[in-house]
Length: 165
Image 1: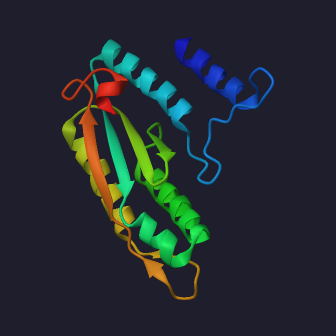
Image 2 (image 1 turned 45 degrees about the vertical axis):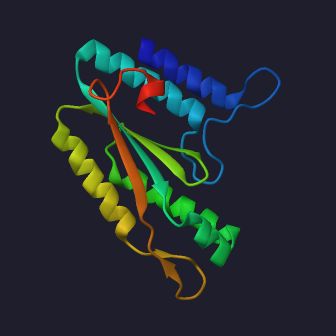
């Protein structure tokens, strides 16, 4: 019942709030924004506490994003963000959450992990997806994007959102 009410609340928030519309998805990437991500993180903490399982937060910062913006323009930077978002989404399991916090910063919630190996496998898939060249849409131009990645494990690194992030 709690899970359903949170989904309903997130859905309602996406439709309307007071006099204005509250958006829970990023405009460019279609990924959950910070508000929706924090709600999902709260649910993950509740589930992990109740069931004794783990989850991981993967913080990702795309390297050389400013260089791509400066070299090929903001439209190319936007395409890069959309492509990175797509690749990240395809790299994780159904039920995990990929969110863009802003700029070139992404965070991934790898929920309900049974063991550390599941987290390692997800990180391998993410790294492989980002390693592939991105076609910039300017003729034959392509860019290779790397990312600075940090991982926090629920329980081992913290139990509250502020510490984990």
